[in-house]
Image (cartoon, rainbow over all chains, first blue to last red; front, top):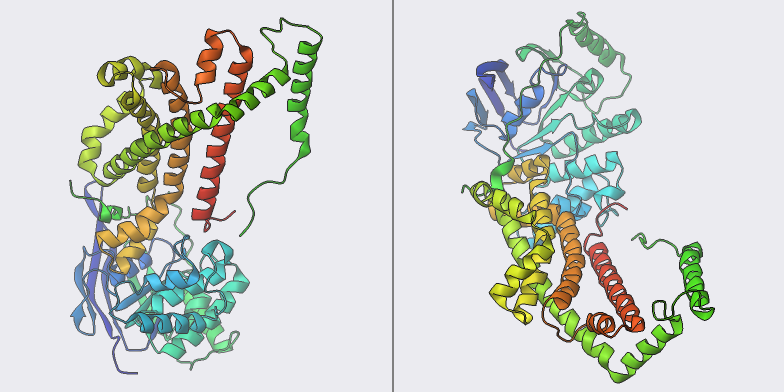
Length: 274
Length: 254
């Protein structure tokens, strides 16, 4: 694997206007991610971790600071960055195969190469035999695997995962974490996983970025100096987990729930300007 | 794929069979004036006569051709204008309120105006049928396109889709269930419009002829035959639309 996939965040700040006032959601985020590294970002709800991922994928482009992928500033979405959302976001009218192919719509590959790489990625996520199935026929775990295949099929330099297993049951989640570890090792791709599950963050991450809310900022970065593949139940993982959990042990502030920052309405992309 | 046609339940036949029996009995034993309640077999006899003489086929072909032509015009306009309103905020602002206001005019209230503008002949009938089809198609197309999930639109942005790709790969398929629902409804309305046009505009060959003639000549057998025929064609159109919808939307969970 060549040394591509270096992601570098420099003094990243992001705020949303709320009632005319700028509300800071990310404050001074600086982070250097090495090629092939697995970074887990963990934090409670509202710490801006999903916003951070939206900045990295390019779905939002209003921010201060710099995001550099292999030295190039990130501007808008690109096939060089793949993403897996929490809700699998498969297109219900397309089969597994067609959903994966969707990501290759604007790829320069020839039709034959596309077919090959689609088959390879479906095999990578262990779904061979389900190519012609529709999303409503798949379980949540299978749907999320399709989403992973779709996120990887362009061979991006970096894979972003936004709480990908958050909506799954505990058994499926544990299984898919092991699967993700295997896929990540097989592909050698730089990976950023956002999660609120500390176990998951520690189990998978080479480093765990702990974030704290209001405004979202990095509290500390915890290295997990254990080789992959890791075994669940390793006492060293457990110790790190307990250590990180202690960061969240302060009693939650008894405040009214704040209005979450509004997601910008960018749906009208295909709407005409007139 | 899973079968959607519910299993036939013979209990559904109980009420119609009882009604027919009651009808037959009342005609047979003279419980009511037989000019008002004609014997069922008279209706069957009239139907056979119509079939043999070729009148049935003539009327059916004329009405169906009229219906489908009007449907095509109305559905085409509804699809195009509905999509335009959903995709263009300016058009929506400009034309949306007027279209909603005009919709409040009951369908049959258009007949005097249409007959003055387009005469009593075939063009007027087509305009009326198209108008009946237009609104359900328009509103369902509009709603279908408006309700495309923003989350899925983000996926197309991540894959760098242009507007054309997003329209073809996301918006149209995502809106298709509701667009089909609109077309289905439009087909039912167009049949309603066909009967209305035949009945209220100048008499022309069609399935409504037995209704009009039967009323003129006080022949209830003809009237009942016409009603049954119109009902059967309506049911047939509905069944065809349902089948097409199911075939096209196979991806939907049942």
